[in-house]
Amino acid sequence: MILIRILFICHGNICRSPMAEFVFRQMAEQEEMADRFDVASAATTDEEIWNGCGNPVYPPVERLLREHGMNPDGKRAVLLTAEDYDFYDYFIGMDDENLRDMKRIFHGDPDQKCHLLMDYTANPRPVADPWYTRDFQRTWDDVQEGCRGLLDVLRGDEDGH
Image 1 (tube, rainbow, N blue to C red):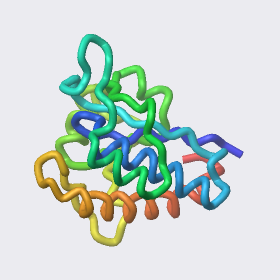
Image 2: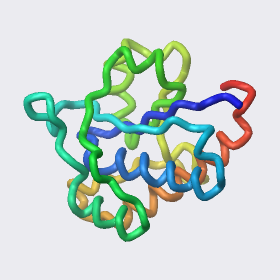
Image 3: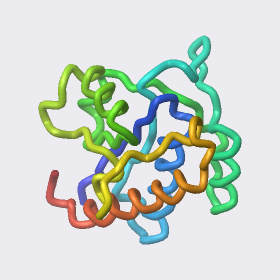
Image 4: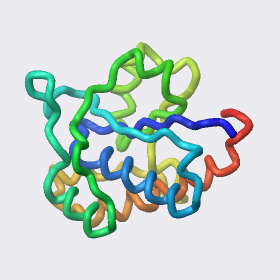
């Protein structure tokens, strides 16, 4: 069995990408597939990282995660680096700005590893940033739908990418 490494990406790594990290991990665990994936999340900017220490998950996101049985204790914002490209198999961004920033950080995407979460759904669209919309439930619903679609696609991806 091949381990698939996934890094969820958003602007600050305190709302959407940690939400996707924990939701995807829980879905994989519920389907007894957790051992197939190495899942994490990161930011395209250092806006939520101070003196080398990232901020924790944003409180409204933390509440949603806890309400659904996930514990984000210890998760702190980390910055995406060019070196990550060689380690992870999939980089899953939340919107077009994330995708552009990922490709800028990586100096391109020669192996086609960069994707958008909602491209794994029947209705591709950006995951709205709840930092601005304040609609955390809508973001939660999008992340659930996107992670389900991604997991369904990766379910048979044991022979490579």
